[in-house]
Amino acid sequence: MLGVSFIGWASDYSGIMVSVRNDGNTLSAIAHRLIAPRTRLVLLVFIFFYLLLVAGVFGWLVSDVLNSQTQAPFGILALMLMGLLGGQMLYRWRVDLLVTSAVIVLVTLVAILLGPTEVVRGSVKALNDGVNAITGGQPIVSYLDPWAINPQTGQLGVVRKVLPSFILWMAFTFLFCYLGSVLPIWRWAQPINYIGFWITAFTMVLGGLGAALAFFVAPEISSFKLPAFKEFAPVVQSGTARGIQPLWPMLFITIACGAISGWHALFGSVGTARQIENETDVLPVGGGAMLFGENMLGILSLLAVTTAGQGAGAAAFAGGIGRFLSIFGIPVEYGTALGFAAFVLIVITVLQLGFRVMRVALAELLGDRWPLFQNIHAATLISVAAAAFLVLTGVYLYLWQMFGAANQLMAALALLVVTVWLVSSGRSPLYAGLPGVFMLVTTMAAILVNIYNLVSSVVIPASGAGQFGMVAGAVVMIAIGALLEVAAILIAIDSFAAYRRYAARPMQPGPAPAAD
Image (cartoon, rainbow, N blue to C red):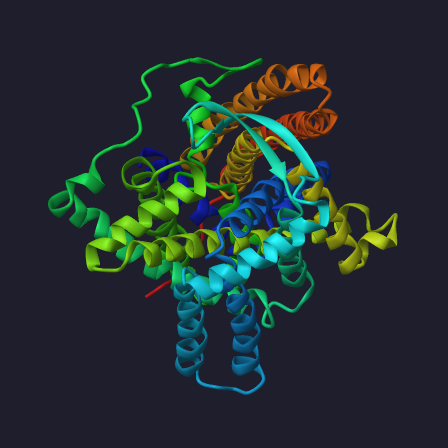
């Protein structure tokens, strides 16, 4: 609540506004003009590897849910078809928006609610079993995740088995995102995001109301199930793995987008600024969406996981949503299916746009020297292959925490660009500069903690156990973390020099008031 009130909404709002006031230019283009040409190059490198972490962690999330939850895939398949139909109806057949919305949203919602039926679940299970029979039910890759919670024992440490069915759904997820990257926006990404908005909004509103009512009518749902965190800097041990999780800075990168998000600032300048009809709309779009959208989703997620949900991760979120919706008489299995669908929709719509920006960043970084990277298909496939490597070799907890740190660091760098723009235009930069510096220090410290944990909990024990796939994934994450640290330092140095340069200039008088 403190983060979104003093930092998050201001970052989103100013990220859009600085682009609107600079002819719709992105943050990297503004940095090139205001700070230094080197800053744009470094920022593009940062953006690509930041989005690679996003793709890795979100690719794992979606693939795992589609593989392990047989009620989830049918609704996502319907989403794909309805997205294609929605774009065709709106932009080719010129069907009224209300009619189009009723068709594509209702069909998707019905498909989601059909997910828990025996016919649908049995069909998905039969598909998974058939694919897994290729290897006789044996995993393609297996590794010990020291920080995953074993649902049977409640203890830390789970052997993750990557079965062929997981590869199938990972390929499906990345195909979905490939289409979102290369097809025209109107054909795929926009209608799919539009459907996802309504499904997510429906889930959030009803889930939030259910959580509020549960406090009064269903104490068994609203009571906390998880123990309180009471240590400032605990040392966590799980078998041969040893890690640290200090409250600062890890809290700030664990609860990621609900408080402040670099994704919002980045895409606010890349896309939102070019769709704003009037400057006065920037405050409700940028500030309002963060305060009343993302923040509320973050709080609802925490409530679902800590009170109603059981287990961990997506299953706990979906289970909590299902129990909140049961307050209105909706059977828990259908509410849970809606929770899984909303979870996947939120993640996969972000993921497809991430690949779109990754291939643009590759084209700008390397396209002049190697024309191959200017090809949208080649650049997207390279980005997908890199993300798939992280999914298959990365330990999920560290992948998530490294993503969280990179996401908040992206927000800090966006605030630094806004700070320089404010001082260059004679405005007070404090509201952006102070939280920008705080987030810069916090997230860079979090990346260092992650690097230490990767070495102590993955590289050393996995090397001794001969799990060299895990070692390779950890080494890549360490290298990405170090690269992000160096990029952030260079951007901070350039931003500080530009700040001093603009602050030393005499203030320019404003325009004289018009005569009566």
